[in-house]
Every structure is written in C-alpha cells, then in structure tokens.
Image 1 (cartoon, rainbow, N blue to C red):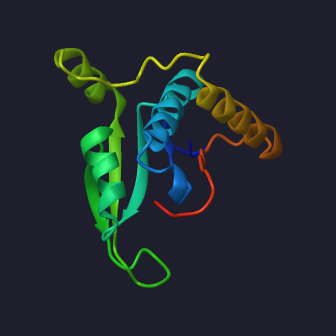
Image 2 (image 1 turned 90 degrees about the vertical axis):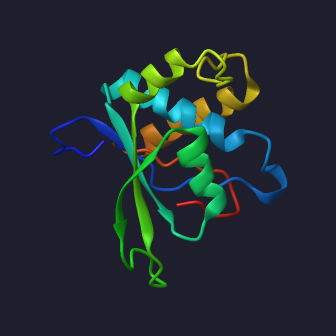
Length: 147
C-alpha cells in the first residue's frame, strides 16, 4: 500500500514461478493469499499491477482467473520500450461476483495446513521484517517474469 494513498490498496510489483512449477496453480494461490492479507492487514479495497502487453499467460491469469480489469495502457512502461496494461482488482466487486456465481471453483478459502501457504506465509513474514514493515507486496518464486 502506498503510504500517501487516499484509498488503501495493494500493488504487486512482481510475480514469478519457476518454469518447472508452472501450470500447478501456484501463481493463483500466491495472488489469492496476497489479496487476502492485503485486505486483512491494511483493509485494502483493491490491488493494482502492471503486465506486459505481450505476456498472454499473465494477462489471462489476472483477467480471467483473478478478475483484474485494465485501467490504463502505459506506453513504454518497460525498459525495452514495451507497453504495459495497468490492471486493477476491486476486492468488493470480485467478492460479489464470486458470491453470485455458485459454479465458481475458486480457492479463496485456502487452508492454513497447505504447505504452499506455509511457505508463502514465512516468505511474507520475512519480507515484512527485512523490509522494515513496508506494506507493498512483492510475491515471487524464482526464474521467469510476470510483471
């Protein structure tokens, strides 16, 4: 969350999963867990991020799986000059959509016993301690890029 923000919100700066571990739902779980912690800890109303215009896999994850919408297109956002979609996930709107869709098979109620959740929790706690409790979120695995 930006310290001078008028509306409390989170921002994902980077999300990456090792190529060997992709297509296992790890990114979805990481994002849903981060969303829940943003809401729980900071009463965040939404989360924002940027995604490369050409990163179709990440765009699909954010828009189709997690309910993000394009809020703007930022020309030349990346160092190589590529454009980025600025995207936003409104937590209240998504919660209403999830509650109204009885066929939705989401993992928003992730069990704390899940080994992945334990690792992510440890990582977030470590970031919080090492980062002097800054409230912006960077959730990442190694290798690969999905900004």
